[in-house]
Image (cartoon, rainbow, N blue to C red):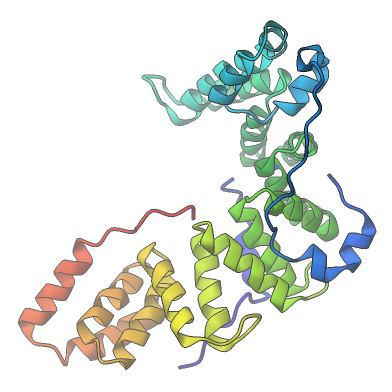
Length: 334
């Protein structure tokens, strides 16, 4: 079988939607061994013994801009000064909550995108990067891309990983394209452990988009994202191990990662894993994965599945179809 290549030049569809937050010096682009390595454990630093209650409110709110409500509540208990300084961000969490209700029609509220955007913007005005990102998402969906990018930029500069990731993705679709800027922000989000950013950064390295092609660097970031639960990265890690691209060739590792992606609903991985099972004589298991791939739109899987089904008894055919009917994908971060 001819192996599926990736990522193809026609793969721009990966950037057509945002299911969807520091800069480094130019020298970091030149040092590929340091820049593209997956992050190691951060060094421990000693904090000063100063009086943190005297921290200026503007600095405090920037530090806490990406905090969730539980973290804000905990920080507010540190001292009276912090409780007062973090009040706008706590208020932002209420607007964020209502924004999500209006957006998704939760809590007995009818969906209303205008009210959702209004709520998100009120949260953003109080300094919450979480609200900025949600407002930017809505702006992007309604076609106001300049406004979306402006909010992503603000959230990204405040250190929000989702804002950095989405800004990178937006730059990959900007006119003109801003590939180098995109790579910069994807790298920042990747260092923070944002798995979607890690996957997109790996794609840029793999394609040589905005940065020199670096297959080993791409494979490392694919692996980092895969270990974080990102299904597309699992599939690409399986391919890397299968063909020895960026990683030492290992059919055992290739099968492990392909199965992980298949079990989490990746249709191409289901097709590949089904073929692997068939080649090993595991016909019934192979049919289950091939049937799942077929239902997900992998037309080539249907032909192989039908060939195998002809070799099974009626009882076995009924059994594998029942297994496919009752199959459920394992959880993932997509």
